[in-house]
Image 1 (cartoon, rainbow, N blue to C red):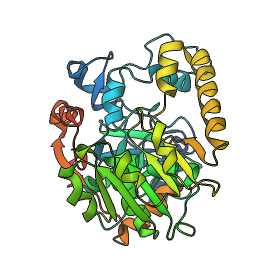
Image 2: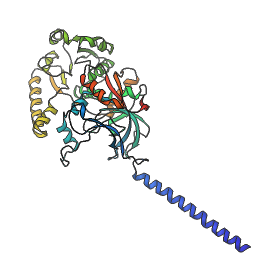
Image 3: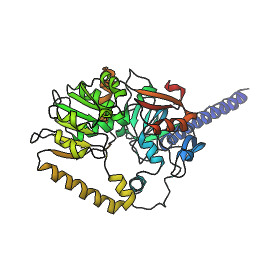
Image 4: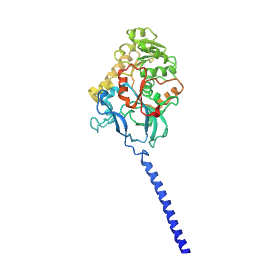
Length: 403
């Protein structure tokens, strides 16, 4: 009897030992696999709107088989998109605008073949939730609500997921929805880059400065009005008569109707300005710099530059040379007259969005959504943007979580 008990005891110990070892082994394997996997789900495809060539609205194509974005660098995050914003730049990029420069940015060593950017996903604004974080990401966690302006050389937000650098994203303002948040980042960071980085303005030096915004009813203009008024500036705006009450509602101090005749005449009768932000281009710089206070550090900043057009037409090298010669000539020409001539460009910036988010939550900036479309209505959304004359942003709702 004791012999039987001894054998049963040995078998029980062997079984328990084996179970413990297998449990530890499986746990170790799970931990080891977690170190090298980027997602708990083996996702390889996702829904998205893509283009396979440049052209009109007919090139837009919906697919359920777009490549799922992956984390290539330790400072990147994968974002589940709740809402995406469309800009005039998306319409221009659909037609191939800036393709030469974007190709160089994506592939600096020119290793890939022409057309390697396809299938290309458009959409420059995103608001959503972080799904995965790279190993070096410290400021964000999974499930954080974030927003961002996506650089034009990266895959865009008209998809279920997008991957971005942690330096390009910011925590979404708590006071607004994802749909509202998707109306702000791209125009906000463009205006911030032009006014702060290029124009030298800040909340500490903006009080009582006189600012003129040419084309104030567009996306960049409407954001710039609100930010400058929050900083204490006096803001004059040019726009159509139909948009006059709209921009005044955003805080504009003085409005000049460009449909009533040449705007340079009524503007010349006003006190001179410390900064002019030009969203119109064309022949405006022939007279706009004369509206600045000479020899006071006053600046003319235009967002309408020939840089991308030059590289598209002349190639990257010759286009950059032509661009450098053009801007240098204009800078010197106006510097001798006591004013500064500058070009402004979009620059992605998470830290800038941090500051902008604070202003949104403080009620100083509001999202202006012109119209919202569902994910199935992306072509209609492009039509809306292409027709122009909008007084707000066109937003596409990707997930119902963003409502």
